[in-house]
Image (cartoon, rainbow, N blue to C red; front, side):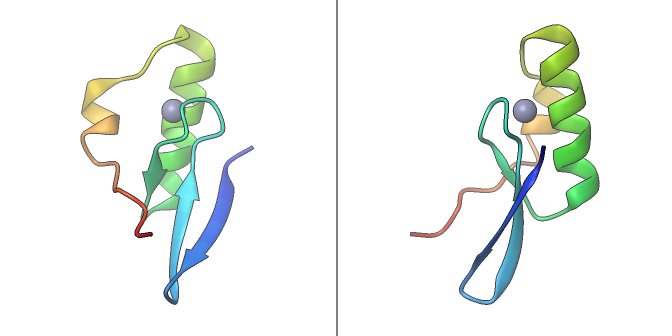
Length: 54
Ligand SMILES: [Zn+2]
């Protein structure tokens, strides 16, 4: 399950498989589905990942 985190008033969605965070839930869902199916990360998706502040 993608988990939602709020940091400094902004929402982030984290892929439970690879722990990358995204500003859009759609991207996190995509990442998680890919990670689960392929047991690896899709660089096109993780390129859009953001670093969680703090
Ligand atoms: Zn992922």
